[in-house]
Length: 236
Image (cartoon, rainbow, N blue to C red; front, side, top):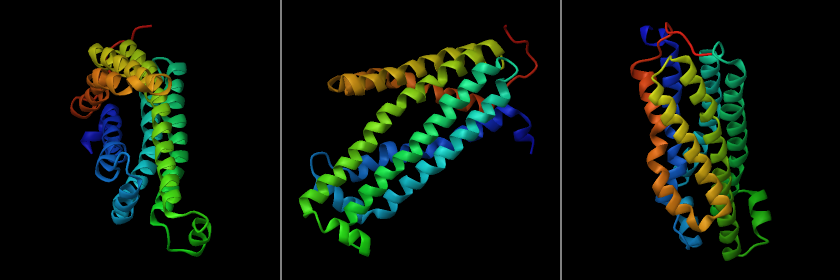
């Protein structure tokens, strides 16, 4: 297919496949989670179990796609600087994927507790807890999932920094994309550290830095629409 003759467009398509990730990050919490009301949250998860399970599946799918995306960038930029390209694979592919795979366990436990019954093992284990305790346990694992995501944002940001340097040096893409991507990376790291060190300022910092997070969207759209120009000289 002519679309995939440009290696940049292949990376753009992989980036596009990651657009399902916000379902678990944004849509499901807004749809199912009721702040301060564990009973209502448990009821919503049990009632909309398929939606919650879809979020789990998309988390796993995104964990696989992000590895292939990082490898696509490695193939694209390895001639520019192999060490930086390897760093992109480690920080942007391997580590986030491993964290995401492990974090899926929190959702599976939360779902098991929210359902409450329906299986010998589940019934035997959960029989030791009364209803409020089960709901509190479910909220604990949902909160654990959220906190791991906050920590993982560090890697979401760090991998964009060597990628931005590679784009700047390669001249395969406009340099404004590299600058925007670098700002995007620093914004993720700042948001992650704020949530871990100064959680009382988390919402304020996120509000101010959210516009910077469009850097990846700009990169994705440029790759899909224009691809990369492989016929330019690189900066050493």
